[in-house]
Length: 152
Image (cartoon, rainbow, N blue to C red; front, side, top):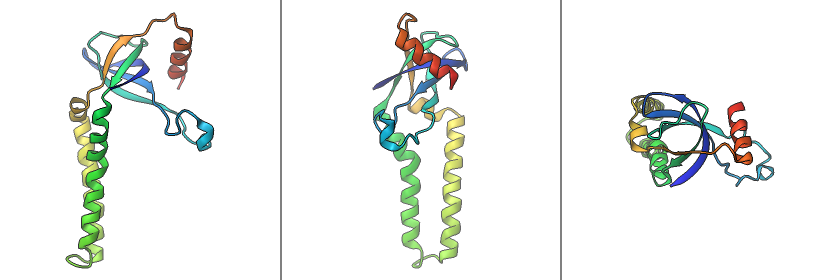
């Protein structure tokens, strides 16, 4: 499990809140290494809110990293496998035109299905992020970090 600092930006319902967190960069926080093309690192996640954090509260969020690979594989692995299988069938069982139509429509259908599942909360139930504690306001570095997140 990984932990991240964030700020509650909205209470969705009694048990779920939207939290803006500052995600880590691929270049290991050394933005000079990638030419600073990372853009904004803030992202919004839905988090289980059993501790009753309110809007504007600085919080620590626990993210299930063990499930992250599963989510990535589910989201991108299936379309890639579908693409490889379809390309292998092109020229043998399918014409290139028909294969291209199947490829495009299959990938669009897959991501539409993922969008529907996300709207229904299936991914939230599978890969649950939780607010584990409210941060104290007396830490100057933490307060500066949270002000930065609120401004983004």
